[in-house]
Amino acid sequence: MFHNCHSWPERLLAIDLLFEDPDLEVEFPSQFIVHPVHWGIVTPLKPVESGKRTLYRCNFVLDLDGNTPIDAITSSAYVRSFLDKVLPGLRPLNANVIRSDLYPLSDALEMIILEEKSDTLLDVYSNERAKPFQMFVEPQSTQNKLRLQSDPETVHVNWLIRQFNGQSPGSAEELAVQYFKQWRVNMREIASKME
Image (cartoon, rainbow, N blue to C red):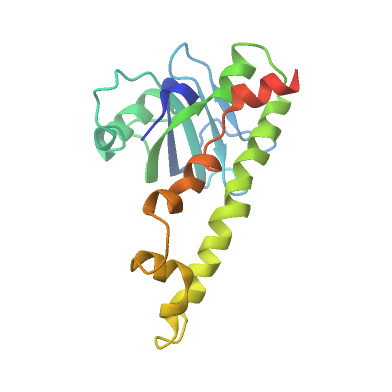
């Protein structure tokens, strides 16, 4: 679920594909796509060699009306049709799409591009997004792994199992609080404190 208070209405279509770039410059293999709506970047994920197919990540902005289902946008037919419009080379396009997904654009990008804030906001954003993983996701994952590897005879003494079984005070809301306190990043609030 996307929260409009932290995102632009546009969505970023990320596509991984195997592709031989006919206009390849080995020293500078990334290309910017300049377009008023569907701007983006095409960059290799592995070292490139002239005349060979390479794994690329293509990121393009889509201006959607909000009524188009995500499954339709990430469908093979839509992605192929879109790539035919933006990638160089002969048609039919000689590219194998590996995966595609749709993401919201963040406030950090909006503030840098439209409001001319410092690009150091990207470092701050990266640090802020790392916190939930370091302080919540990774410890939870480790603990869940240890629970799974527990002795079945003693697993019932674990606080989380006891809480799920209703044998300990607390609620689902208490367990979910980290998702709401640590998971979200309000870059506008953080940026206002930096000024």
